[in-house]
Image: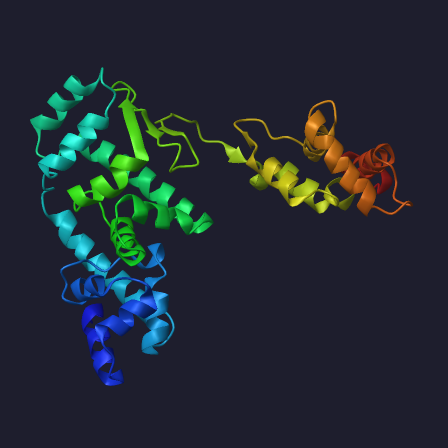
Amino acid sequence: MDVCFVIQQRLKELGLEQRDLAAAAQVTESYISQLLTRKKTPPAADRTDLYDKMNAFLKLPKGQLSAMVRAQRREELKKKLADSPAPLFKEVRDLILRKCAQAKQPLVRDIFEKQAFGELERLVTQKLLEVIKTVIRNELSNKESWLRGLAKQHRRSYEQTRAMTLEFLNTDVFDLSMQHCSTFLKPVMESWDIDLKTFAIEIILNKRLASTPAIRFEFVDRSASLPSEESPGFKEFMRNGAMSGDATEEELDFLKSLCFNQRRPSPLYFYRELQSLRDSLHFPEHSSSVMDKRRDSDDSDRPTPVESRKRALRGWFRNTPQNIAKTNPS
């Protein structure tokens, strides 16, 4: 069933107006009107809290609107993929080309203009869109003042800017408009560059609007490797409390991130790697604060690091298959 129809019916049943729903969802009445008349596509459920607020206000079962939107968007995506890609608006393409590194502009323009919306133009536009969306989500999650500052910059109300942001976060490369570009892409992105041999893309962001100054995408060939957490040595290391019992979550995450091609390290390798992480010679700035915390929180009866290492090594050595066979002869 169409989500817009459900919302309209529910408003009638409760005797409510679109402006009531707009106030509850913290968007403009115009945005709700365009949404319900299908002039705007409903935003993706996982990119906004809009449906949670609507759901609560309309007293619908939890998650109903989000589930309906997901199903509706899947059907729309199937239809889009079946059609040939439409070209970008001329103004959108021009803005993207103006933001390209000056030395590459003529060549990139030639490639773009050979096709209505060719592979390179889709790749670049998709990456730029992904980066700007990520910046906006990160800034919104950290501080609401970012959105209010953007509203002030464009001389719009907070509700108007919030509605436009929800619409932009829902936009894909096929629906990118000049309004999206002038409001979000143009101020947030300083420039972009591409290596046409490797297709590596570097995007320079506005330091005043983005906490990350630059982002780079690369296509890298990697041979298949086994993550640490799947290796037998790491599993045995985790089972051995004497070796891994006092490891922090951060330390374990680091050990899990290690990858190996052909070699299969033993539990002792992971234990030594753990001790290297804690060694003040390797990380002098970090280790002192960590050791202070350990000393403050530990009991005075707790064994010293050297004693702990000896105990762990003795325990591991006793549990190796060779020593088990010696102590339990058949």
